[in-house]
Image (cartoon, rainbow, N blue to C red):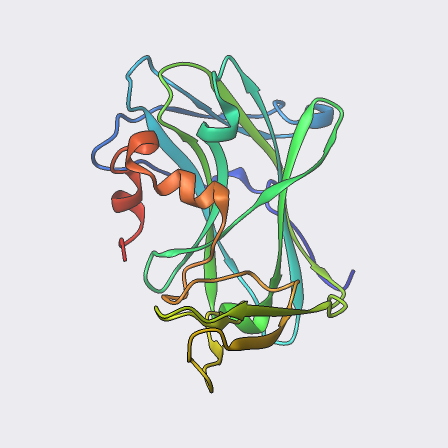
Length: 232
């Protein structure tokens, strides 16, 4: 790899954050909390129903390069880690959601989250946010956070099609662009070719992800979505 960055080498580079409407959890730098007794970043709920917070650090990406952001975590006593533990990338320029790290193969007793990024699509810097969100008990330790350069992905194309209905129907690219509206009459076919390796986005440009949608739902996380992102 041409570029390697171990984000845990300097634990002092990380800052903490919690939403104004939430209760601040306990943040702790655990010097030997990670795999092989390496440093870890811990967040522990305090018993409050709406405890929520994250460790965060800004990352800069260069155009023309591709990167992988990766982090490991382990939980203790968290009732629903799939809902309460997540790693999210936000745009430094406006603080909005950019993408999230998704589950991959674990290592030993550590779960792994990662996301591949095109440096040219980032246009600047992103902040990696490592959350324990809205749980009244439990602890998470984040460790082995890395950002390193990878080879460009091999393009994987798929052809998609949709049947137009009387209401507006169309095929949308992974970047949220309308690909085919030449014929919108009922029963006509709209066709397009999309790249599977790109993040699927809706018409507003917001990435579509079932885990992200759960994160934004009020019945699950209350006003956390409004606290971090501007709702659209």
